[in-house]
Image (tube, rainbow, N blue to C red; front, side, top):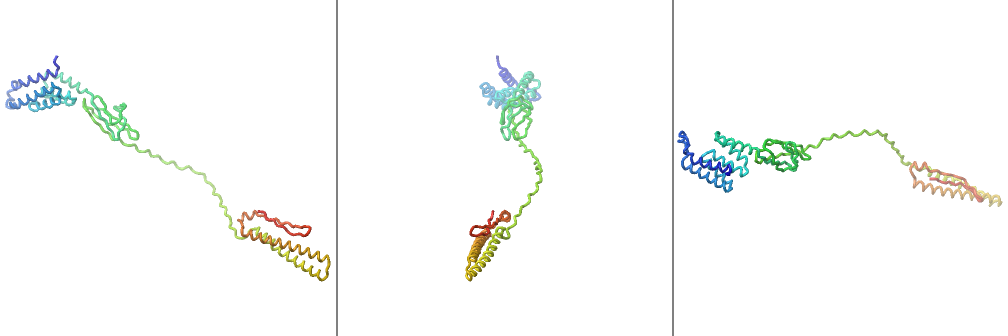
Length: 324
């Protein structure tokens, strides 16, 4: 059984052969020349041969050449077949639409319309790209599982493409996919603005009473210990001097009138004078040391001087003890 396109090509050949015989007389003056008709037949014959050999690109070119010489609608049927074999569905649809326009009373008009309906339902390819890439692609609200750049096969007609990428706003684009063709759409994504966070007012801190500053008065003079030791030294020196004079007085009396009582009394005065001189010397040295190493008033207030008399079998005196 012969394929439909072979039958159509044979029919076209027959029509081209008898075309000069059926041309109306009113158009005789505008009829193409013999050379043009021969060129049209030759180009159409080459197109048929190329089509039979599977060289569809050459067949398409030859059919276009033939139609350019003589715009015979029959040639458009072969042109549509060649384009369809090349995968050019939109081109095939265009050729069949032109056929029906140029031959509205074609006997195969219904078959051609059915063929057009089938071609127009051919899925198309939708090429989706985004800037930046890597966005998830949603087609008509459904996740396709692909990321840009992506190629999707979908039915012809309008579609909504949504692109979703973290850190960017959701982007939508409407595109009309043609039957059997390739339609591209590229969307530039807009980065999300960082949310403005109002700074929280600082928490009110409880008012704290300022701590009073403790001012330590500078030491303006000797401390208590220095004064005490200095007083002991002075008192001891005075007492020792008085006792020394008294010892000398008793010595003079003993020289004039040697008596044991006078000698003993002179010895006691001399002993006490020595003790007081010793206390004066020690106190003076202590006062000097304290003066050179004097402390702050607070530390000076903590110093205590303890004075106690001292009496022994061979004499007596006054003792002072400085407590820090």
